[in-house]
Image (spheres, rainbow, N blue to C red):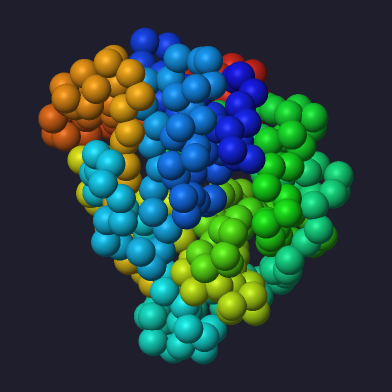
Length: 306
């Protein structure tokens, strides 16, 4: 992946070959209060960039700018106090799941970013080749790669670890915005073999506590809906933990004729978005079956590779 370019004191990532789309480094975690200097800088930077996209932060849900816009969304948890979340925003089943970790000996705490944490994250990532029905892109990464990828945004990050018998079994990387209004779960991963201990629910509980300690008003768990895919087991998990769908404006600023044409044709999201959802759901099911078959066969032949 190419290094970000610097425009108006902001790091900008550019992706794509036929259609080159730029966004700020940390899009959905870091935000622009004044996009115009960045847009003008991109026009004059000397690199071909077809579209620049950015999203508004919470609680700004009404469009502020006159650029071309589409509705995006966050899975957001409005926070007042920890007690309010615990007693009014989640149900008994979710509370019991969060309590289960402590009962089974799991310790949840904020942790510094250091070599010991990175080593633990590396082990969490490499537990299983498949996660949520897709190939685990983090599986088998070496220490240096994991360190480099987790070392982003350290000036505005909080790491939370779930430990069982002094070993890391799950973690959260929480990244908050420039005004400490909202914090996003950039990473939230737990080991599959410790699922019975409920570490993920307990990690979210600590994330809520960490936000209240810092006066952060919204905890964001990525998107609530992804494209045409509205419901999933992950969506249910978010909802059970108090997250709700909040629509926010996302802007697409064309910088070239190619960018204007892509926006006009609706292909700036990629051609996959043009495929009907029933077909995509069937393809996802086939992919999940294939990965389960492939890696189960490998484990039979060569031992447990996860």
